[in-house]
Amino acid sequence: MDALRQIAAERNIHAGAEARTYIFYQAFLTSVRRHGRLNELELTGLFKARSALADVDIPFMFKDAALAPALYQRKKLHLGFKSVRDRDVVRRIFAKCGA
Image 1 (spheres, one colour):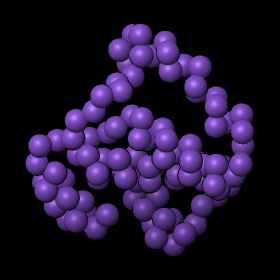
Image 2 (image 1 turned 60 degrees about the vertical axis):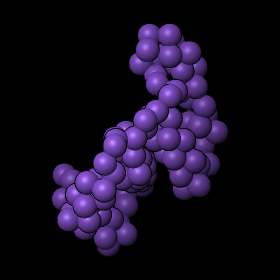
Image 3 (image 1 turned 90 degrees about the vertical axis):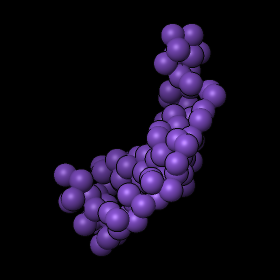
Image 4 (image 1 turned 180 degrees about the horizontal axis):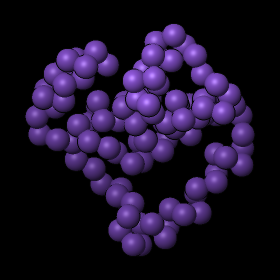
């Protein structure tokens, strides 16, 4: 599926129902590329912002906001964040993959 998504991205083909999936995929890779691991807050922010630009859906923008306090209390939401030490390794991996 990832290979098909990559081909679709290269050809700029996005089905209406899969547009948000593609936006999530790109936000996820952006966060990992920057930090070497996933930054949950950055992922959420990028995903929601890019989704809003593609399709203004106000209820979708705030759909998950009520979950944040409970996730934070259960230590499932991490506000502090550290990147991996050697981000050059991550850059080389992305470069080798052509991403």
